[in-house]
Length: 587
Image 1: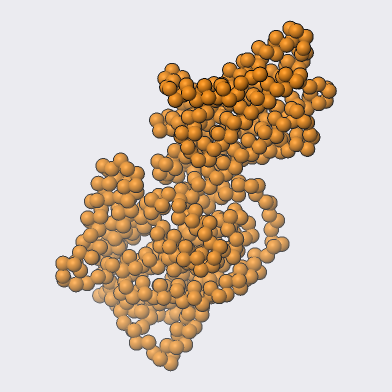
Image 2: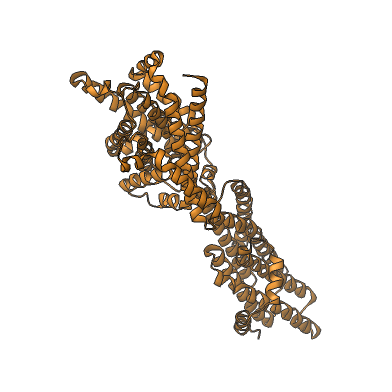
């Protein structure tokens, strides 16, 4: 084997690993996070969890990615440990799909159909189509499909390069003798575990083994224990991701380890015990890519069938390993638990989790405002404290979400996810400011109570109508923020204009009452502060709606957009403005 063969081997391995990465990334983007969200929600049934784990892993081409996601779900409290067991088992079955895809390289036959089925024949075609989609298509779905095709083509080219590079090893006696050493079950197991732990991908290590089969020097007696070790080595990724996680997340990682460890021990004990009496003749035969795939799948299906009935024992074993007293956990507040750093490896899922947390933050701001508005007529210290607690909670949400979204923005995102992240980042400060205004209203209500003051009946009536308009605009904005409904977003700005007019009218009415001696200057200051807070809340709601309306222009300039919107007031805008003016008429 010459130096150039070694370079070809290393280059082929690099292309193989990169192709696998591109393929997985393209598949993840094409799914748009939907697979992960399904995985999160539909795991109540153990058998369903196994099926979902297998399907998701087969599609995203990585059992490590699936298991890391599961660790994140458990760490966030989204998924119970008992639910995680089924998904982890299914992931081990799903990962065997890669070995079957790679086994296509071993197809033999001279007919046109057989030649066409060879990856070396159709990979160039996929590469050409993939490049055309990426360069010339404006539709994002086609770009993702193109990425998947390119990833698959590069993967297969890498596989072919490795196979070609190692072919001369068939004539090297030293290579054959080294492989013979690995026929020892313990040594083969350790080698498979070590290589897979190093590259952190059982699919990649199985692919390397399949490439070596072209030499004819890899016997099934060698391949079998190496494959067993590969299944154990793939657990390293999940174990690393569980470092610093909560106890249940660590337990999920250990369940993955124990599943593969126990399955391997039982399988090897049964297999080699039976072999001692029956003598499996195929062990002395040269392995091929398809045979490797068969062994890989057989083991994982066997381990799942063996341990599925004992899933609770796996949970118990993991709980014994990671005991309750080993760490003191702090409960993560509300939807903030969704912002787990592990999800950043699956950006589409991380975006969905961020959006869910941001919607929860919006609801908290809205609740704080409505509570504070009620304090103006019926002050209650418990509700006042609740307003402050909600405002503190919203602040924590903004800090955590902003940090998480900035990290997420550095990932490779689809245009739709990039659009979502941009809107969330812009809108967070508006929801946080709305909660600040809620505290301002609460303080005004407290000052009035402490000084024994109250608004006149006329002012109360006017302020109630004004408050109803503000509640309406906040409610609409929250729905827009949650659903992204652009038709609903168009209703915000007309209502904001009506609220601006009401604010001016209320202040003018107060001045008239002040001149007639029906109100005091001090109460006027309080009323002015409250109505200003109401008006500012409406401004922030306007900003939130505008982010959605003008996001299609790819420029988050809310002030510029509002100016153009007001200059080009269409009939629909005028009709909605008139509608709100009639709905919120001051007495």
